[in-house]
Image 1: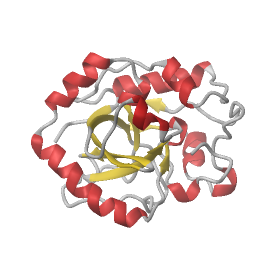
Image 2 (image 1 turned 120 degrees about the vertical axis):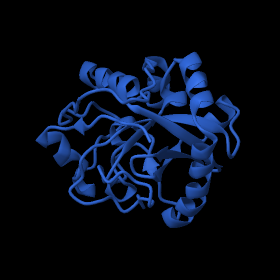
Image 3 (image 1 turned 45 degrees about the horizontal axis):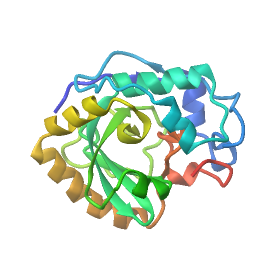
Image 4 (image 1 turned 135 degrees about the horizontal axis):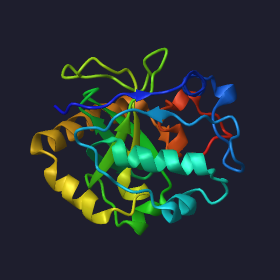
Length: 222
């Protein structure tokens, strides 16, 4: 198990993460002026050092007006975050299962289906997720922590590096460094998580990565 950093958020950011569906962030057709940049402290022992690819981000969400703070935060998240195993759980719809050894759990994230052909994806394909751990007042209902969890966090925010970063060589190297036991663990937990999710997944919009599906309303990016 890796030793890894705390993602400390200011009170306003924590309030956003715990907001009800009526205040789900952010609408995809404008900049969310209420968003407050989380403050990341330290670096994970297994940080990927990945860089944000702004062209990939804008291609996925062309209508959203990104602020400099939001871009800087996502770049920091990919650079400093804990890099762990992720796999393609489904291609219709496209769902990625991201594993955290801190939680000993997976989070399921739905992406636009067009990425299946763009990246030639199939069920079981290996990806890499970069994690931070926002605070939640209550453990999100979409996370069932396993008996190997490190009892330090109750929520996580995974970004799929393959879809948001241009650090191709670093991502490839990190995949090679993931143990077979971790790949097996993510596959095992994914089977159970898909049943538990019942077709409800987290949004691929990266500022919503820490928000469970029940807090996302129709105005949020899917």
